[in-house]
Image 1 (tube, rainbow over the protein chains, first blue to last red):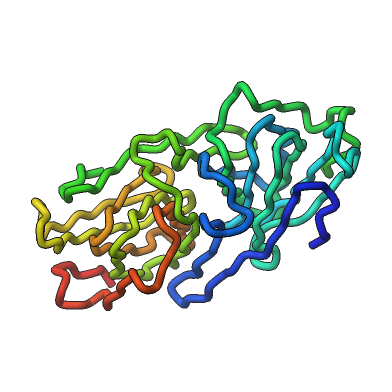
Image 2 (image 1 turned 135 degrees about the vertical axis):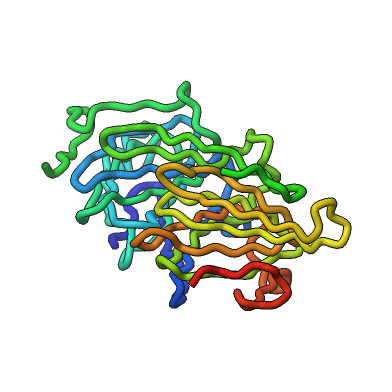
Length: 151
Length: 151
């Protein structure tokens, strides 16, 4: 796991509690320093090799974890006043070796690609409920972002 | 899906949004009438045929959904002042046919059993962060609860 190189992005390892009946996986508590406000919790499944990108939201902070499977996550910063403007960040999230929480502040572009040979599940505990009016989406191969997704 | 027969328990169907890259699964928003307060979101995996039971919490409301796999959930009411005291409720939760949110208020005993042939994932978005001091657990075969888990 690389250290975040994008202003406002935080990654923190999450606990997996062993249990012979099935593990328990932490994600986010209201007393965690990374927690701001609860807007919505929902899941996005991604098929192996498929790419969901690029997305950004004007207002929402996204808090992502991957409790099932594994993904490659890429973040791109084109915020005008950011100290890390034009930076790309990528990491692997998921189980068993990369079970972490990643906080993505508003206005960053992000996308992810499913790894492995089964669908992966991304949980998002965002600071505001989803609102089409504040969400944007561009094509994964858009020239606006200097990253090429593997095929 | 049976209708809840236990005071304070609510089940509501959740949306699965089709997408050829992988579905999106709703769980809980802060403007949903069932939402009280955000305490914690975490996951519990359960192996096929395994039983995690019985648990109850003095203060927490549990909001459960099963975004991966399928479980049988059983709830038992021994609350002294409940209009449904001594009632048992059971239902199947999970995908593809039973993707619902279930709200379990404090002081109810509950437990679940994994179905299918792979581990299932239970998400809990509870009203308070987990606290050992307010949590209780008794053996799945305890005589205190008139329910026998299948073996």
